[in-house]
Length: 241
Image (cartoon, rainbow, N blue to C red):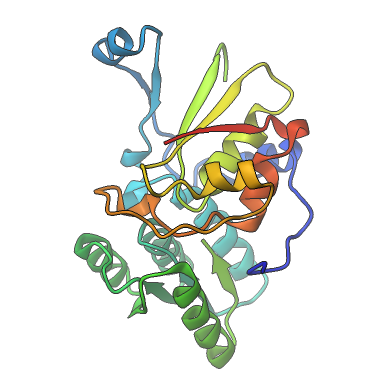
């Protein structure tokens, strides 16, 4: 069963509008090249260094946009759930706008991500180990507090994007729409919800296998990212495990 109502799919114009709004509000991270990786891949590989972003991941972009819009609309707080990166980003964005933030992470979340969210001033709640458990807890806090829930290229031939809940790879699909750029999602072995979902034609949960990439084991790809990734009109995605 779908976890949430799927809104209208965004398009490239909305991605570009968001990029303009975010200009100056998030770090413009560099695109780097590593000759050693080029030799291994047999191709020129460009790496987008989003680890240099505030909060340590690209999630700061979406969180800044969402929290900024909610703050402008008069909201005084936000709620989010994730395995860590989205929660940290929402906490940082909320602090910037003077909003209260409650973030729900799994009980086995990486301690550094729990610490970062708390350091940003968020109320951190640990709940379960699955996305369904975190969503249930987050919705309870959102209802109790009355706060909205923020549910977690020039000359390129391809984009290779790590896949957790699917937001990043969906964004890559939208950015690549209308270009010859191919988008490839990469999932850890045993955490391949998007690959299985694309094969099945519907979001398909998995029991995540152990992996050092804790942000890439949400259990099930999100409904909206799945819809974007499977749409050939939006430069659909291929997946590797």
